[in-house]
Image 1 (spheres, each protein chain N blue to C red):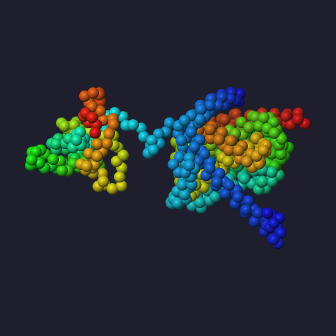
Image 2: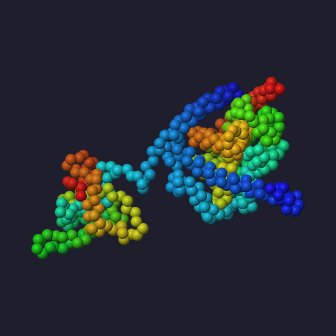
Length: 333
Length: 170
């Protein structure tokens, strides 16, 4: 594609820009479609776990329910509360969406199927995941509503307790692969299930899943949006399309987290017979299913318990994992 | 820290037990009755729309004694009649039951001395226009003639004292 653009006599910088726009469009469309699928999947899984069929009216097995919901949301009135800080209020959904899309830059869908395989991919991921919380804070602060503010403060408080163990497990993954490039992390896990990092890194995997679910605000850790105590948390005042963007970003975060777990611990897009991208999605959706399964099993954790979990359990576990990884890498030679 | 780790391990164990329960429910059949397509039978003594019953020849049992209209606490029954000059019996001309007023108390059925009224199992009464919610004599007789099943004879069944149609339901 890039060569073809150059072949038409286009300058290199223009071709770069066009390729960049095309890649980001593909990512955005992919995220929107994934969110449509995931909303339905979430409701179906929740329904089945509670012995209900879930949405089943629109289309075969309720397939088109999410489309109807999306159309309803887009056609709703766009309300900006009179007490809101208007500029920040409007900017917050854009920031969170940009952060969710930006994460996808480094994730390898398959060999050569990556937007930009940065050589500091792991550091990039650790940096960009923090931007979400900025968007939550912007939304909560600008809404001029105490529920929103409490929700976003909680998400900031949550950040310090899960981000450190998360990054420590990423360090261990980098040590295993000997590189911070995600392409190399995947390449180090090629050649069968025994090479997956999940086996030597089982502690790291558990820490990553727990911290990652907190990162993606999934159910046992969905404190920033605890419906029973905070109405809807940071997005209480949002309606219509802006709310839909928050919702989309939430599911984008979920799928990012699952894709990262796949890439770091489950061999990424490697697998027999089927094409790599199919394996990537099979593994990603398996992780998503497990997070939904956990989410619909466990009740929401209390905020101080989450702090304790982060500081007293996850960080020591991540450090133990880091030490073990060092020994393992030395022993492996 | 060790205390925390032990708690964490215990939490993992209990979470796995809980996940085992939820996955069992995930694969077990649903308990949902999908209402418009599937319906549960209404229970005995159910008080749906009051309907007029007919005798074996298909004539209404109602003799227009007005007792039901008087028993009605919300005055939702309107009866008009004339006396047949040959048989000297009252003939019901109009028997309107305004279901927007009716509160399904069953007092009209209690009051009827001829078992001409019964509470039916007809409960899907929603409509887009108000006038169609006033049921006429013909409509009530028609619903009453359809075998309206769980109307029971109070003489045979202990039925919370609710009389739901005497004899054979018609």
